[in-house]
Length: 114
Length: 119
Picture 1: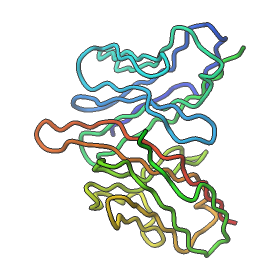
Picture 2: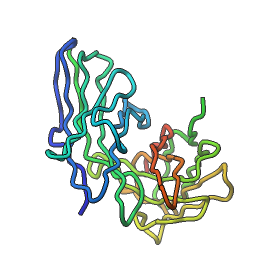
Picture 3: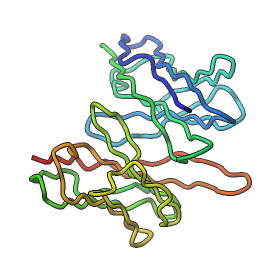
């Protein structure tokens, strides 16, 4: 079955340090991959997407993600973390068969310490 | 700044009562999705619509849940009768998907959610 996996339930990083939130995918065909962020008591906000083209995708709030076909990964990165980046992050994809709706990973909680 | 809106934001009800959640998608979007979020199950897709027609509702308990789009500006999710296990945050999302040849699946935009508590 097609899926995305987020291997870390939580990531802790100090403010100012680079951050990485991991996502690996098992998707047939050309993957449509997305990152969303959820702040407490809020809906999900779109950060960035990979459809085709450049493997490095830049998104909102200084985030970027690198699509790596050989490693089937789509890790979210930011060069310098802010305390305000603390939130729940979801990787997602569109299956190319069956239910054509965004399917989400389990989420990774990012905690940025001052 | 176009947004998906949802009402009510919070709902507390007793078991057995009917619950109706409403969503106004972004004008011009052709797909609408309903998701449910719980600690145990994460984000689950309940149903989705394309051009107001239901495409898939296999994620919903059919005997108690129903989803409709009476017009392009309103999507509803009803639970009747509600049960404590339905307690969750329900999100509506909309998106613009280009179907057919050269199909393009774009991002979805989420509403703030309805927090449902069934006692």
